[in-house]
Image (cartoon, rainbow, N blue to C red; front, side):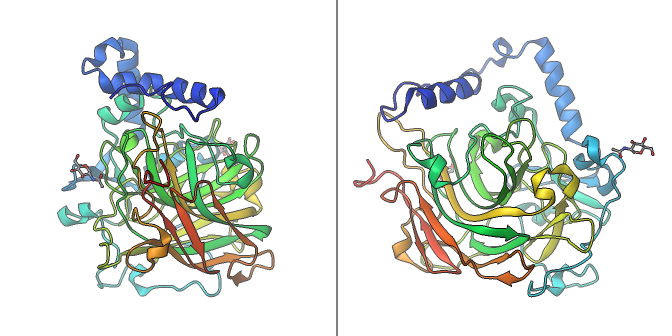
Length: 415
Ligand SMILES: *[C@@H]1O[C@H](CO)[C@@H](O)[C@H](O)[C@H]1NC(C)=O
Ligand SMILES: *[C@@H]1O[C@H](CO)[C@@H](O)[C@H](O)[C@H]1NC(C)=O
């Protein structure tokens, strides 16, 4: 795997520079078996300290068939409470209210014996007891891949879907629906689960939602979650659940999952960063996951997230600046990183890897789209606009409260 700097003719110099700077370290450490040349004694010590910070003591550990280790961590000792603003935080075990119209499933009731609808591969080998949360253990090799302890779990490619910022951008490709023009206090969406192929370890392919406020490059605040394939971060090409947040446009705050403190998890069944297999089958069984986010305006104003009908956890209002009030846009859709190889678009897929025209069972979808608007009313998107950076590579067909999106990447029309 050669360092592809300079091979992409379509890059502007600035983009190329940024790309090369970001990738020099990780690429060389990935390619070099003898990591001693990269990691000296001091760095090794840093790795051990970082692992200690990330991996809280486990009351029980479960080995997943996919190679992950899931640690059941005392809910009161989770990484969130390392955040300086959350030192005295009293954990909220439940939201104080649900927005009207959000369906509440009884499988969320802890006393219910019914099998939860959403499973992850690690469930085959055990469950986390009450009072704990499942945390995917960070391994030494995860940190070594990141190239530096400071980089681990951080966003290397900073971007949000926006017509303005995506113009002329080659690295990030988006096919998303964007809703703006009001204040937003929540959203919901259901997306089906696929395992898009990624050509390069440093490329990702994801399906997610964004709730944002503020200005990109300055004070952007975001709440993000969805599913992604990202070998560089996780070490394999499984599709994994993820969350993300920032309150300063990805500069000093924000990272994936629980890798930096802030997000408070209360659920003991779903693990962030763990795989979401089984996936949907092309022209066969479809598997989808529902996400809900809402600001708990009757409580402390925290942003709660429900995944697959379970109250998964929340972003405390206090960790944000602008989002402590409301969001100014909601977006749903796909994003890939295309690093271009030998002047060609890579074969990294978005969604199912098929174009939206193929429709149900074949293309990836978002459906049941809703927002909670300025009147605190749950409604379908009213001011939505597609943002599609490169429709011959990845496209989107919007039908109001649902859409199909995705594509194969490189093809005769996307060379
Ligand atoms: C936490 O509580 C201590 C003692 O009451 C107080 O001194 C400190 O300022 C509090 N920290 C935060 C972040 O609220
Ligand atoms: C994931 O990686 C495995 C092992 O390298 C490979 O066999 C498989 O085809 C890959 N899957 C995708 C979707 O790229």
